Image (cartoon, rainbow, N blue to C red; front, top):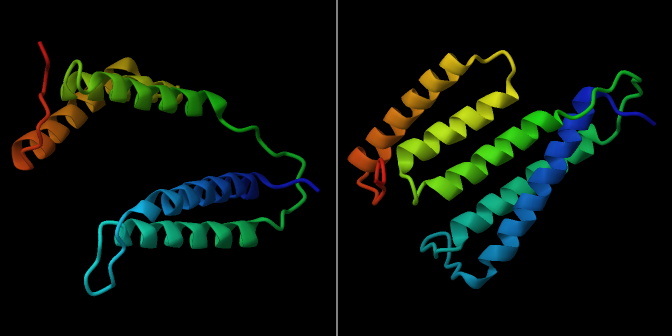
Length: 150
């Protein structure tokens, strides 16, 4: 039985959500839960993990039936790889180079996933994201991040 393209992507999303939700539930077991009236540190993440598992199981139940269709497209591996590389670049650069270079590198790498996006558009998007993030996280929220590490 072949799956349609829509079902295929929903199945991947359902499995990924299920895995993340189960991981969150497993990780918060060491935190104090508290009660709904007096929540502990693990209460809210546990509820989100349970909600994610529930929604993922619902997606898998609804979309797991499958519809026969021979024109199922292949997964977009190129886009996935570029986005994962952009996340890794951000994590590697944010403390060493600063928030602005980390965001610029992340946006430039992830924009490679969309072939229609030009380099100029990627640079403008990166600059806008860096400006907004710097204003929000450093100026407004006062997080201990530096814009550029020299």
